[in-house]
Amino acid sequence: MSTARARAELVAPWLAVAALVAWSAWHRWQVLTASPHPVGIDGYFYAIQVRSLLERGGLAYPAAPLTFYLMAALAHVTDVITSVKLVAAIGGALAIAPAYAIGRRLGGVAGGLTAAVVIATSGGSFYLSLEFVKNGVGVTMALTAVWLGLRALAAPTRAAIALAVAAAIAAVATHKMAAALVAALLAPAIVVELHARWGPARARRAAAIVGGALALVAIALGALAPARFIAGRDLAELRAALGGDARWSLPAMYVPHPGGRDYVLALGDQTRIALALAVIAIGLAVGARFTARLAATARPADRAAAWSAIAVVLITAIPVLAIANPDGIGFRLRVAVFAPAAIVAAIVVGRALASLAPTLRLAVIAPMLLVRLWAVDAAPREGVVYAHPAMVAAMVAVPGRLPPDAVVITSERHLGFMIAWYARVPVRMRPEPVPPARRWRLLAGNLIGLGSPLDKALRAAHDRPGLVAPVGTHPRDPSGLVLVPDATWDWVLTQVPPKLAAHWRRWPTR
Image (cartoon, rainbow, N blue to C red; front, side, top):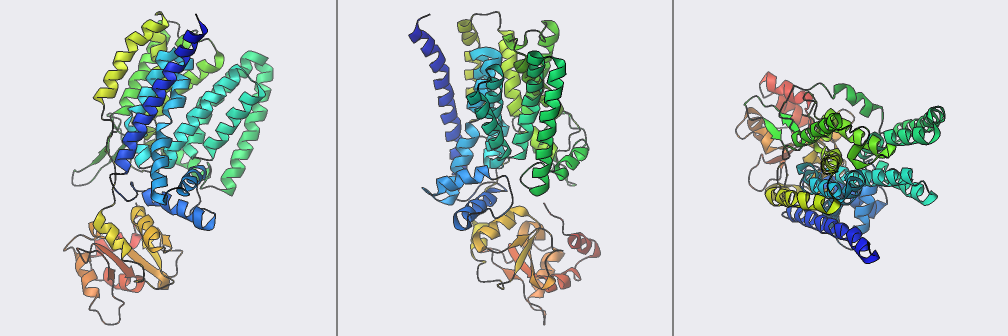
C-alpha cells in the first residue's frame, strides 16, 4: 500500500467524523437558540455560574468547575447566555470524536463510525446539551479519557500516560458521572493489562496500592467538596437506585401522576436499543469464542473495556431502576447510556464483520449508518424546557419590589435560578435556615391554581389589615408569579383546607 493511500484511509474517516460533529453541533445549536433565554430547568444555573466567574472570580454555587470555566472563556468574546449555549452544543457533539476513536480500536473503522453515529443520533446525548450541559461535556471528557487511557496501556510512553492522566483529571473536574464512567470503563482495563504484563502477584500489589491511593484521594475530595466530587451522599443514593417500580419499556424517566397523565421521557428508546446491542454482543461471545477474540482484537485492556461497557449497559437496563428523580442515579444512568452503548455497537459491528475485508466492511455498514442518520430526528425536542416570555417578564419586574435583606424561598429550582439571574436576590429551596422575617415565598401560577382556595387566600391577603400584601409581577395574571412574605404566608395557610395547608407547610420541592 502506498503512503498516500494509507494516509487517505487514515484521514478520510476522521473527516467524516468531523462532519458528523459539525452536523450534530449545528442541530443542537438550532434548538438551543430557538429561544433567546437559557434553555432547560438548569439553564439559568449555568448563566449564573458564568456571570459569577466573570464578576467575582468564583462560582455562585459549589460544582465541578471545568465546564463553567470553558463558558466563561467564551463569554469574553460573546455574552454569557450565548457562551453557555455554544459550550452546550459543541461540548456535547464532540463526544462523537472519542467514541469513534474507541470504536475503531475495538471494531475497526466500521465499528468506529458506528459508535460515532450512535452518539450523534442518541436522544440522550441531545438531551444533555439541552438540560444537563455539565453532564454532556462530562461524557465527552470521559470518553476522551478512556480512549487516551487505552492508548497509554497499549504503548505506555510518558507522553501517552500524561495525556491520559490529564484527560481523567479533566473528567473528574467536569462531572461526577464522568468520573464514574472513566472508572467503570478504564479501571478493569488497567487491572487486566497489569495482570498480563506483570503477572498476577505483582499486578495485585500494584492495583491495591494505586486503588487505595485513588480511594483516599476520592474520599478527601468528597469530604472537602461534596458538591464538586463524589461524596458519601452520592454513595448513599446507590441504596435507593433499585427502589423504583418495574418499567419494562425502560424509559429514561417515569413520573406517575394521580390523574393518569404520567410523565414519560423515552429519549428515542435508547436504553432498549443499548440492551439489544449488549444481548447481541453476548450472543456473539457465546457463539464465536468472543472472549478470546473480542471485536477482532486480542489486547487484554481492550477486551476488558469492552466487557465493562456491556456490563454498564446491562446495569442501566435493570427495569426497577428508580427513574422518577431527575437528580437520581437511575435517571442519570438512563440518560447517559448512549456512551457505553456506542462502544458496544462498535464491538458488535467489529465482530460481526470480522471475516470481511476492511473495504467490504465499510460497504456493508455505511448504508445502514446513512439510513440511521436520515431516519432519526436530527433535532429532537423531547423534554426540552423553554422559558415562557410572560414568566421572563415577571422575573424582570421583581427588582426593587422586595426588601434589601429578602431571601426568596422557592419550591421549584427552575424559578429559583430565574429570579436569582434577573433579580440578583439570594434564593433557597428550604425555609428552615432563613430567619422568618427575611423569607419571601415564591409561587407560580401552575402551583397556585386559578380559582383554587390558595389563589383566593392570596388575593384576600391584599385587603387584610396588618399584613404585608403579596407581590405579583406577572403581566397577565395576578397569581401568575407571586412573592409572599412569611408572616402573610402563615395567615394564608390558615385560610385554606387543612390538607392543603399541611401540604404547603411541608414545602415540597422539585
